[in-house]
Image 1 (spheres, rainbow, N blue to C red):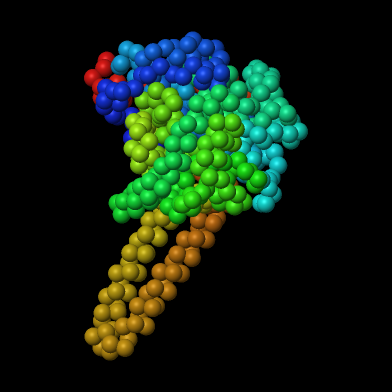
Image 2 (image 1 turned 135 degrees about the vertical axis):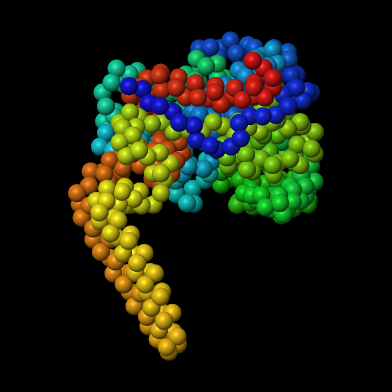
Length: 513
């Protein structure tokens, strides 16, 4: 049987003034960008529609991941699809879902691995290789997968069951995740094929054509570096005063532009007369950086605060779908939109959920527990279930004795104090000791029950491993490939249905039927 998909509260459903959101958008895209897009299946027609005058898009994005990365990557893509479809029904104009592959990202430690749950119910980390602390910070679009990817795919083949879908799924990942392919391209191609039937178009901002279109906006950001730096620092202070998070460091001359230099991708720091890289200390004048933008645009890229601004400048983005971390820091970028004259896109928190397979659902049903109860310190839920199994007579006797001891020792302490105040403390201490001894007896009873109920612990451990692997939400850890091997397209279809239900809120609040 196919799994069920539970919606997990992560943020507010999409609610915004749709018609205000589209005002001033819908310009025709720069034709040079077309070669920077990937499309497959139904997305092919959507790409043509995107380049038509008046079209809009809903974007989402993620840094490239091994074998498409954690589950939430898929959730992001299908959330963008659902929101685009809802907006198109409301506005009656083309609204295309676009996935922005952040191939400039250089955090290899974050993308060099994936996690699966094996048939033996163990969480296993499958990794390419580690990058030395002093290694160059190579962007993922320049980082080859290497031969290690074959071992990763081989291990997934070994650790997953034989199903009717397995050969096709393995063929799909082997086609795109090849040793000589860079991480970003492999990811972009795999996502394009997996979600293309839903109309999702994939954008590669590291493509030479995209770099060329983005370069003038990066130059503008450098020209306004001092103003942007000051405004971002003021905005951060304002957000902090309101008690809101400001996870992205600003101020101190740090610009919003990155450059590939001698030590890899590095942040440019404005020091008045020139710009220097934070780590290597290499320097350029503004004129020299303009030349680099014109002749070597692939070396320049926006940082996380400038990226959404550049996106809104080059794409007709009406809404951006992000995770909670992104939605938290995006308000920091508001001044950059204003200074560069770009209208901000609406920010929407993606759909979040968990996959509950039938074997896990049976455990939840057997013990009449909700999945959320497993997100507690290990042993806590087990103890409560075991205590619930304690014979009623024993439980009642323990509770009565505890109540009686507390009450009678309290009376005795008061009486003793009336005779001699120095006697009150020893009496109360004896009362606490008696209650402690009772607790120890209760622990021994529970211990015996635990021995009789080892199966409870084992079954809850299995459920916890699948729903909260490594103590984290499932969507942030587990990879989609094992689920695709088990359930095929039905797995993606189930997620798509939940995302559509989530996006329907927008239509309801907009008065659509």
